[in-house]
Length: 433
Image (tube, rainbow, N blue to C red; front, side, top):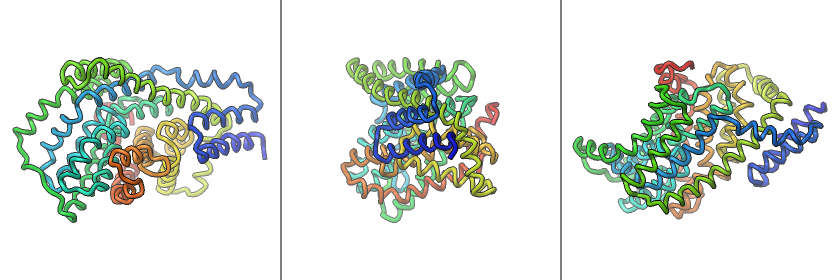
């Protein structure tokens, strides 16, 4: 075995071993990188240099701002308003509260950008509400956790910023625009699944649709929804960068939460900022460690080797695309979202582009695959949060989620094989796709 192949085996083998042993993911990445550098005979001063290089990016400054915006808006009393808006829009359908849950997640995801925050915030309100109206508790939990993944696709998603930085040379604005239709497609798919189950179980309808009530709720929710407009319109219109828009959105979110909706006092603001620091510490150390890990991958020519290996399985673009999805789904079962984006993107993106998949389309595929991974054991963070909120055993929630896994997989296949779902809006706004 050549020295390069041995170092590759040490890097990937030690990393996967530590992941299966449930090491914290940052330690897994860091220790495997150190072992690889030693095997390559490189000075360990490379490690801090590459960690610094990994986080030395103006675009990455948007990540802490978007996380802070999500925490402020999520804790600032907007959940009830978005639920009321969704209820006025789709509550009249059979299984109305399930539809409300799904649509509210689409709205809330555009503010928080976090599936975990969506599940914790909306789930604590909607799951008891659904149970009180006769819905099965496991069904209610399944709807909540699966619909929370819409927020990963709908801008402003900080995971999209991480992907854009990792992939290199991809417009954050293009990724933001690319997420709207896939997010809506996922919502429609989940609504179809919910409707079928609701009809079968005779779940109740809500009140009849009223345009007056809808417009009233839209007016009440305007201040929350305007945060999305500030970010997306500003970035797409070229008024300011993603980082600048995120900073402005934080100030706006603070004003809305404290002074307009009055859902948060200054003590709550400081508590929210503490939560942001906890989250950011995890995300940024992962990004830093992944910078060094990526350095090893590049020097060992792992992306080229992975491309050759995958293409050696089949020459069919369809088979290769399915294999890419399968790899990402398996990784999602054992790793959290950010590490997958940081580690898998440099390896799999060249393979995807070699079969004609746009980097923007592949970003949407990566994010949705990772979203499905958040719902699957053994490391499904959103699955655990949903089970905790509903106070239900995880295995029962997984069983109730099976029909929704199918809805999400159908959506994933449509996004994989119909590129225009992801690329149409970016092309309309003049982005190169």
